[in-house]
Length: 102
Image 1: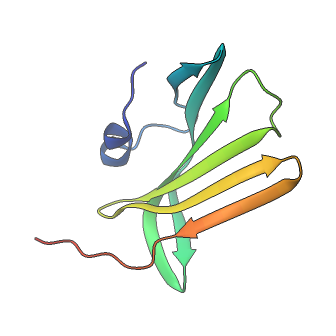
Image 2: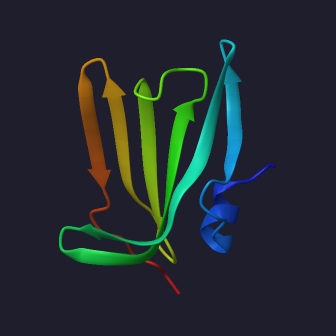
């Protein structure tokens, strides 16, 4: 199934929807929806509904690395978590502010 991030944010695909984003050095990099209709709180502000998308190498151990991206309806990308396991490090980037020009 070919799924783009625009489609995910607009149509809220079900949990478990996966798709390949590229092949690199014989490895298959995939994305998967791991949560929908969830609330994410950043600096005291709640964003709902949100979709969580994980990016991973489907041929590496689960703990190798994972990128999580959090998308809020009518806002877009609000949070990114990059996790590696050698050693375990999680880098988080959060939305600071946004403006939508209507």
